[in-house]
Image (tube, rainbow, N blue to C red; front, side):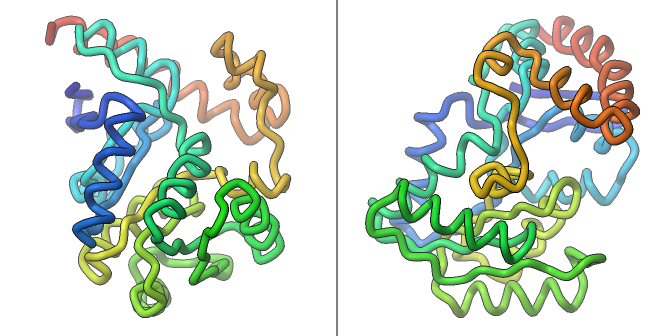
Length: 248
């Protein structure tokens, strides 16, 4: 499904979680890396205005729908895709890695959060090997010298799957660089996924997510942080939907 705005076009090329797991398993077997992005409305606003972010998205091999509005837009286009929030992919991808004997890396957040997330993942995936853990310092440049050093260490660790909890656009920029410097590693950009596992951040209750109101829960929890973000998202949604409908 092709998602297009005024200044960008992104192909959501993995429609279901089953398809994603099959593709990742095949890449594990071939020792072929990848960059996985989970597109949502916040990404759309950034793609419209940020050339660097658009370039990074062009380097993503796998793109899935993160957020109900993206799923709704796909239905308007007549090419429905499954909802796959990055935070909900962490455990299934980890279990697949453990099953295939693939070690993983955790990058982002804080030392304390990564340690707790690592414990949670080991409990969820028997036999899991975590070969690299790193919490970058504040102000981390995802394409600078420090990023290159991290990628060198990730490649040397033997990890074939790296979870990036750096937030957008840093994680997608880092993944794009990773595709160049660590081509055998799969990079999954998962936002707050590790912080949810560790308890560092609390996600909306399941019933709130089921009625597609997680955005409202987050807004009420932290209006100063999320008000302008969600306003920008609301403003781009009508045009996104209209272009999708015209593409049927």
